[in-house]
Length: 312
Image 1 (cartoon, rainbow, N blue to C red):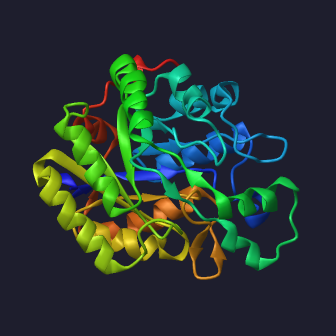
Image 2 (image 1 turned 45 degrees about the horizontal axis):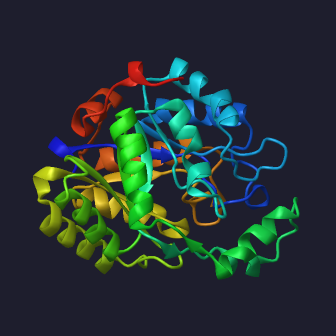
């Protein structure tokens, strides 16, 4: 839960779901990612969740060299916590997905808590004039794609990044079973509280974006972990983003926004930057008499190792 009414805002800057044709504002190059991330932090995000893209055509890339073109710049310009993906992009191996995190040894990474269908193919119904051939092919392949995160995979990440690098995790839970998977690793002692639980709604293949599901995920998380042992955060895909995270904040949760999760600021209005979304949700939660947690407060609550112990 958000402690003392102070909400941790995570901003997911570019991700691997949206493609360049979908928005001219999606950060692609290392310069764009660094600039957008720093602006999001200045707007109030205390955690920055980061993917990398091939600067030539915008496709997701696991290449640590590309990450290292923007990670040092972000660290130099902001105190925000850097959180590197281990989800990568569709079709990457687990080793590829974790390569940048193993190289950079950040304070946090994401960690998906179960395998799932991850369908992006309905986007093709919009019949866009694609800028790159890879974009429609990338979306179509998800019709027959399983996003793999087996128990063995999770064990490997917990050991290689958690034990060997002192990394803490944003545990991404796309469905109810993922909460039980997380509880399994807690019971085995492979995970230590406080646990940063990111509940995710509205991805085809995961739990639907219904408010009843939001309340149910919270109830089950409370039952499995105990309110004192975890930090709850909420994200929702696409048009569900702002109303879901606002509701989650009212219910005592932390929140995640960013162009990875939604390209829009409001109905029919593309967000021109990640900072636009962060600024909007900050205004909303402060109008609700809630406060925004600083990076220092986020580090303390999540028991992170500190920015001086990363390798970038």
